[in-house]
Image (cartoon, rainbow, N blue to C red; front, top):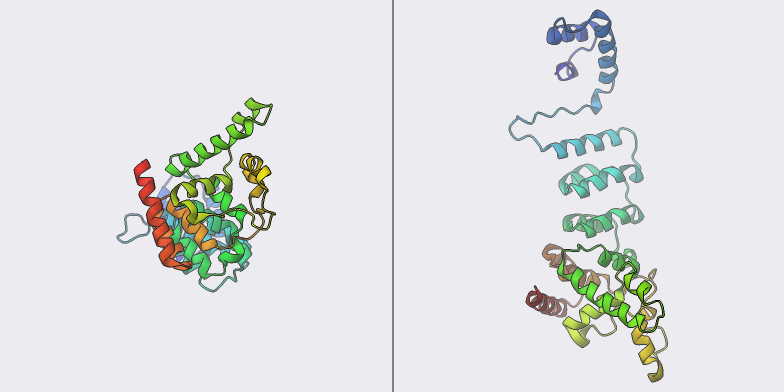
Length: 297
């Protein structure tokens, strides 16, 4: 209350001491009043960084929005470098404050490069924040350069264990592990190894839903086709046919659309569908996947 009353008025020692005595009466000894007076004067030297929030005032913002605006304001007073705003941007994503991100962080004061946004883009994808995905694309992210098979695989590994897709991928993973175990003397080690899904399991799940429509998905087509003699071996070692994880996705919008549909993330899927090619084919594939998954739930 003392800071609020002094923010827009004089800040001389007499005014500060008067406010302290008026608010706390005899609770402070004179030595303490001098100490608090000095502290308040130091705070008010940076009054442009102070933010006043009255939760009882009609139309006031929520506390998380107030905190985020205050943090961005403090950052602006010190730097215009994009890297210095990443913590605030991550907080905006976590709190889903896309309006503040647009008005305070992406308002033209800071020059953003695509590489600055890669980490927060992954956060937005994993945490189902389609508005932020759109915002980052509008401000420099090129999906054809950003999306690699490694990132796509990480997205599938990040899905919730409560999701039906997780159950389907886990089943494919266990099937693969058991097939590998038949050719591996260390059966126990192979089966209990901590599961991490790969695009091999993803391709198998998609094949169950789309059959030959997804033939060749997430396979390295540059490798020499296997002979009939090696077909059985290839079946047990499907990971060898995966594309290089550093390689950029051939069709990132399609891959992200399928990833979103498989998790029933409607808003995200709609955006990826609108941005990608072959809208009719993608819509038909999406409908078929959702229909098949509805039967499994």
